[in-house]
Image (cartoon, rainbow, N blue to C red; front, side, top):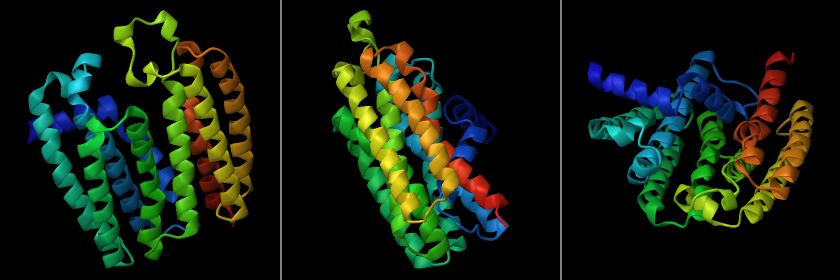
Length: 288
């Protein structure tokens, strides 16, 4: 047992640090919760959301082990076959625990069971098909999984998914997809062919323009959330500031796609859609 726990801990530190995973999961989950449930339920729900986020990362890494053995041989899953078996077993056990606890704390047991069964079926099918999918398709579908969290919150608290949950899911998907495109670009003229990742085999300037379109669509979705009164002034203000920052960075990226111009997006791509949500959650918490 100690060996198994050590492997899970090593993987977590390497690929999904607990503190960061908890913070992101809390923001993704509470983004559309105008009123938090009982503190104990809220804490359990955040822990479940963090476990979901961890399992998505783990499933993606397990799916890419053969590729990563070449690109990232230093990673735990690539250098220790025993860890692969342990983490595969953990994924199944954690998924079962996640379903059990979610059903117990949900306002509508049947709705939660149907929702999570559908999520597991769709995610399982995606990871099965992922190696056969074109890179842009599987990148888009993988990032769509962030949309699970606001929908999960809706089913948990109200027993259903409302328009604001779907809009927030779209907001997260567009922002995370834009992040994945923008932070991965480089100058292909100065990079050896064997160091090019699949996304780098496309025209990098076109991908940069595509990421800008996605960021703008994400910002537009944020405005729709505001007009639907799903979020407040703080969300819109911070989104505006982040949009101006992203626009400035995108102009440099489109002018010259390279590791240097893409690097800021590794952080700012996430902050673009997480900071507005953080502002919204904080304002809700301090509002009388």
